Length: 319
Image (cartoon, rainbow, N blue to C red; front, side):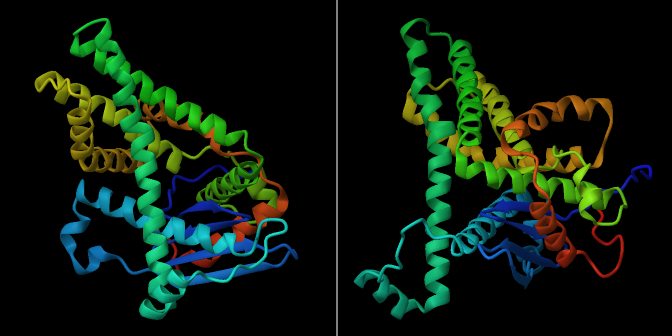
């Protein structure tokens, strides 16, 4: 096999239900393997808000903007892929009067955008509740034993990590999620094959690693890790004992935490030194829960999705 080239692409993707979404510098493609075995393809040109408002592309700010954009587009693509796979025995239901009224008032596109926005909000609310509110509330138990702010910070930090790892481990054991995580592995392998400068064939992709340092799993772990560091420093300087106030402080710090995590991921993605490898090791280990080995049909989906978003001019997608 040819020696791997020192090239890192900004192209990346997300696993879907029986499919993969890939995003390139200018295009996004969703490829879904339908029940009949055929590939359903959806393509669109990307428009970036930072092109209209350059300040949103500044360091730290861009992390929050890109995270919100990724969440919205990811949920939209996931809902699109789910349309091809109704649950067994599920019949198409008539829309409720309220849904019909909203559809008439807003139009189908705005109605779909509203549903997607609500799904993103609910997803964010669940994540914040699970990984920030719950550890804060459970951490109050430490106050029964000691008044030490350090002990409470350590307890909350340990709970964040424990809940996050347990959540990923539980998801990895769900039958429905295993195929999604296999498509996740196909996405990573396809990106690695392209970065290695190899032709995008099933044989070349199959032998690539499935753990990628710029994975969303690694980013989420970095959010948890940075939140631990930031909150420990903040609460050491400004001790807050009330659980609700501590949670509100966590919310206030969240944009900074996401921004810092994004910048770290960008830096780590461009460097391969020993320090980077040590710092990214926990995120790569966690991908054991969120990436599985794909079959050849999944790899074909990953190859097709990536081919659709590659730039016409070679090298313009360099990370």
